Length: 134
Image (cartoon, rainbow, N blue to C red; front, side, top):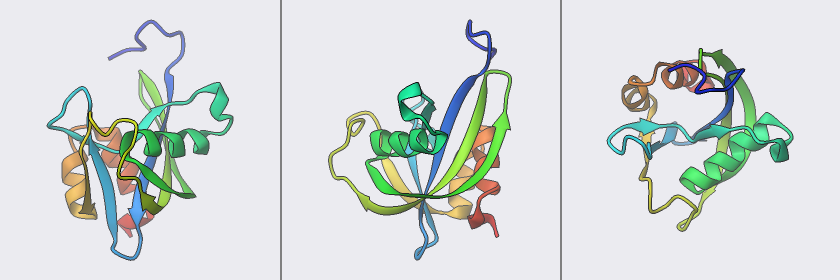
């Protein structure tokens, strides 16, 4: 993919939304590939200050997820982006959210989430590094 004209890879912050009691992960459909599933993620912006704040913001925008970042998981560098993964314990799901008309969301168990994310290696690797993998 390359760096798309950037001098340095993009900083991408990724939330792993978890319903701990149920052992489930919330996945959302990709806007670019509506038949593919992803974790809520997006670029870090200076207004976020901390990487965790960007992961939390992306979860709210893309999946309507409200909760608490509870754990840093892993950083995965690729040629085009550096992905920072955080576990987010979900407290609530908004029924109306920013990208509601552009995405679907679904709770799935860990094994199903891995299957759905396999098409994007860094997302699958991030989830495999989470506490759910234990």
